Image (cartoon, rainbow, N blue to C red; front, top):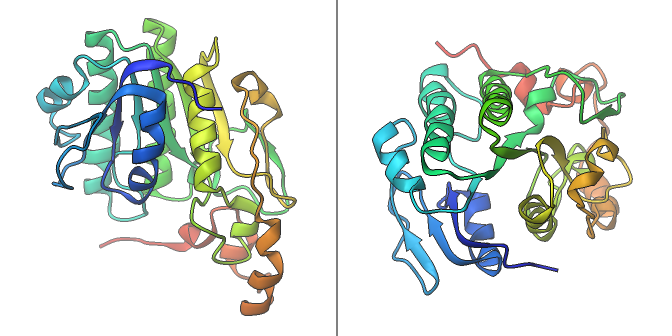
Length: 268
């Protein structure tokens, strides 16, 4: 069930893949949905506000956050790559976002973290929400930093955050790895709704995944959030196996949870 829990919610990264999918869904969670990205993505629709901003621009981010009650933060760079762009968007950007939240009294954030925070755990392991970060690249490092920023702003200023370590959110799993990491768009919305509405969120980590039979992540320690996935990658298993070859167990992308990210770079 979707609950209209806030008057005005800001969603950053509105032009990205997940932002586009969540745009209409999140309107049910608020009276007004403020949408932002660094680049133009069209005019505001009914029930929306559109406000462009570079996350590395502290003044622009402050103006963006003013007047909202909660933030769903999808903004920033979402893939592995050279450090400097990730520094600006994901590291400077997250500090700017939380400083703006502090200044304007925003009390709850849903932060799109990533499974790449823990990418160097092995696929033969099952880890919980208290697993220490083992980032698999600059992108994973930036998300681990973001989780620490969120914890600092909770400990000092009381801003509650759900750090959602999103797996692979696509219409369906693309390969065998995604049978473990897949999350449907509807389950992602269910998780965001749970994060926005749970009575006491605190600073929490939760893995963003559907109810997959094969999984490397245990969300037992985040049951207070109230997320119950309703979809599963299992219905795609036969089709995925039919179109993919058996994994090479010597390949680091098969050994580690981060997949191909563990071998990317260096970027020179």
